[in-house]
Amino acid sequence: MRQRAAVAGKTAYSRPSPTYLRELTEVGRGTPMGELMRRYWQVIALSRDTTGTPRKIRLLGEDLVLFRDGQGRPGLFHARCTHRGTTLYYGKVEERGIRCCYHGWLCDVEGHCLEQPCEPDSGARFRDKVREPWYPVEKRYGLIFAYMGPSPKIPVLPRQSSAKSRFATRGGLSCRAFASK
Amino acid sequence: MAGGRGRKAARKTHSMTQRKIIGEDTAYAMPPSSHRKELTEVGRGTPMGELMRRYWHPVATIKDATSIPKRIRMLGEDLVLFRDGQGRPGLVYARCAHRGTTLYYGKVEERGIRCCYHGWLFDVEGRCLEQPCEPELGIKHRNGVRQPWYPVREHYGLIFAYMGPPEKMPELPRFECLEQLSDGEFIDVDDRSIGTQGDVIMPCNWLQHFENVADPYHVPILHGSFTGSHFTNSTTQMPLDAEFAITTRGVEVRTRRPMEDGRILFRISEAVLPTVRAVANPFAPRLDEPVTALGWVMPIDDTHFRIYTAGRTREKGVLFPVPESVRRNFRNAPSWFDMTEEERRARPGDWEAQTGQGPITLHSEEHLATSDVGLVMVRRLFDEQLRAIASGEDPINVSFDPGTAPTKLSSGNWTTYPPSTGAAE
Ligand code: FES
Ligand code: FES
Ligand SMILES: [Fe+2]
Image 1 (cartoon, protein in one colour):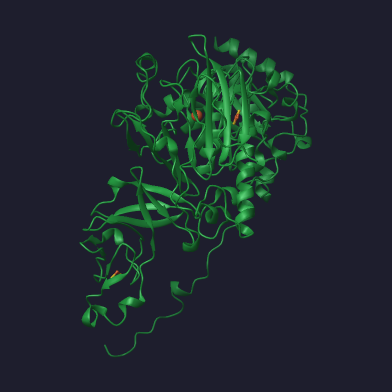
Image 2 (cartoon, each protein chain N blue to C red; image 1 turned 30 degrees about the vertical axis):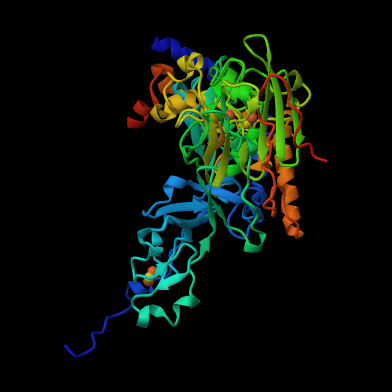
């Protein structure tokens, strides 16, 4: 027992510090994979979950709010109101868009500001100069797709022939059922 | 039915084969965001932290200072408050000067607070009185150590602390509305953050609340048209007009609204630097007298604050009386604490709007409009004070003269505007 115990080879002590492939995994704004992801339409919700009640969506590291206006159009916004930044999650959905709870700015699904009720003439002079940061969304296959990339690079919303035929013959099939098949 | 939906889907698919064209300015093009650090961050050594450290701030009510040590977090510093056996309040840095365990576990004695670890005893000004593990209780060395401490004063039912440079310690602030009491009135305090419409500790930056004091236009929306009046029907109407002014003590906001009896309500609110909210009772039960209660916004750290309120009242525990007629509509609504997440989403108030701006709002993303003039003034006034202390001057609202008269505010619910008391030269 008085002899020194020798261990063969390297132990876990000498392992190098681990790393991961950032460029393949991280998806925030301005990262390589983030930029790649932003060249595609991404599924963000079921169409039937897109309603007159604002819904929090977190995608590619961005906090967003999804809703459907009174005319049935889905809208996807940066969560922070372009006025002073409170979240549009507390907003109220109306016929023409979503209204912020704090000072009542109303924006349509493409972020155009339609009303600023605390400003003279409801902001007629100023409101066209602001735009709530928004992303284009499309409904297909019972899903809502969003495009979060550079505008000139917006691709055609992809069609899946298998999904299309399923939906063509079995319309209303839920995403969950589809996934479990 | 399934077949019908299928046909519809197919039709839509057909119409979508064309590529969508969108403008340049989607959220993708947003520049990176930032907040104004110099206006919001209050830690040691920061510009606003240094400005805040030129003033007395309430950090507790006088009842909070007892023989049981209480944790206080203020301006990003962890402190311990206690009251020694002789009745003197003490506010010390939480880490013991010996080897750093927290004095929150200390034992309060006649002469001070004793650390649990090796028993060093400190008085309310941090002097070390005993070191029981040293020869002769540390008689040779104990005078060379001092527990970091801050001066405190008991005033208006609150414990005020001064955390700044000793040579710049001003007189305690005094306000006429808290000193001139009419028959049957007394000063009472509230530590539940009146004005946040929610939880006591609010998880966002203090300035989001303080500048809201100079934002009368959120009232007709957030507290009015959005989900129904939070106050009285007259106080939550869009004002007939609003005037904003920088005064000798802060920013004053004047609004006029018609009352139900046909008269006009002249309402004045003031944001008194650095953190006092002089906002009259929004239920306006008493007209033509100075604001009854003042709230101090306490910056706990960069992303939390709470509010201590002191006011004149005739009824213990009631600083903002609600008239019976309004109580029926308003108070029967569930309290914030009883509301579900969904109910809070559907009926937002100040708590939701201000925490909804995030832990520290992103000033770079804002689009301020003409109705934001009040908070623009608040920010400008803070900018001026930051420049003043940086160039060696004293900031607004500090006095070194013990004979200074209490500040007379304009705030209140009036039937005509009172003469201005703080017009800036
Ligand atoms: S923060 Fe949205 S309208 Fe003011
Ligand atoms: S750490 Fe406090 S006495 Fe030792
Ligand atoms: Fe409010």
